[in-house]
Length: 261
Ligand code: HXC
Image (cartoon, rainbow, N blue to C red; front, side, top):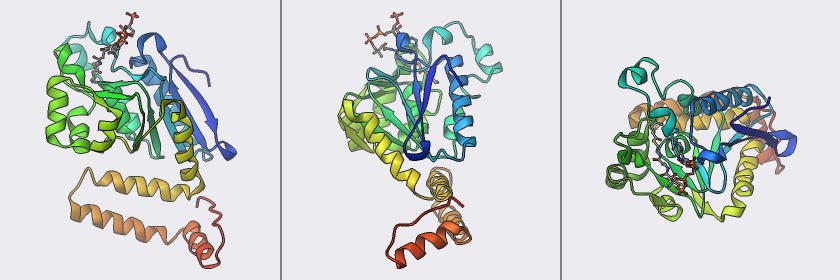
């Protein structure tokens, strides 16, 4: 399917990696309603495709995304935003994705762009990446989870400083603070993200999805409930063919051939 605001391609052995590239270069990939619709449709189609084991969300070398589209937001009143439940439909699609999704971030990841990267499962940052929640400069506050997710990633003090002042964070600082899983040279960004995605694709797809669901549970519940959830999911993995294959392969000193069931 052809989209107007994103590019999609599949990569990897058997086409197991779905790559979505945000593509509004004239506006530094500012996230408007049309782009969010395209993104939602692309995610739906990758989730429905059994061959896709991992998704990469990326932008250009200059910008992952410079935020929600300010020209689209400027005319909206409170009543418009409230009635249409602005920044809900479509936006939450990324955080609801059940398959692993990697944000490969170069350049600016600001406002809604930073929030979208944080909705992914991990952030691989190019050395020129800049993360920030500059909404305060526009007379508003983060609205796609920035006050909640950034605080969970980097802690209260750094989140407060960034959100109250609009200061941007470099890639190195983002890695030190736990926002990015690693920093790579900008020219190697996509290749590095594809390398991680390939490793994920070689593993059992239901296991990577279940593991993701368990990690995400850590953000939503108490430790005791989270551990109980994990324990039950762990038990359930014993019913799969991939568990039998993975353990047999180890004992027989060979590489496992997972069937994703
Ligand atoms: C609409 C944007 C945009 C945005 C950049 N552009 N960011 N358009 N919405 N968020 C457009 C510019 O208007 C300009 O268009 C073109 O992209 C290039 O941007 P420049 O400013 O000329 O580039 P540069 O000088 O390199 O500065 C880059 C920048 C700056 C520092 C990233 O563009 C900037 O500060 N952008 C806004 C960042 C921001 O405030 N983000 C938060 C948005 S609020 P023209 O036509 O002039 O060439 C938000 C709310 C979240 O995200 C809540 C829910 C999601």
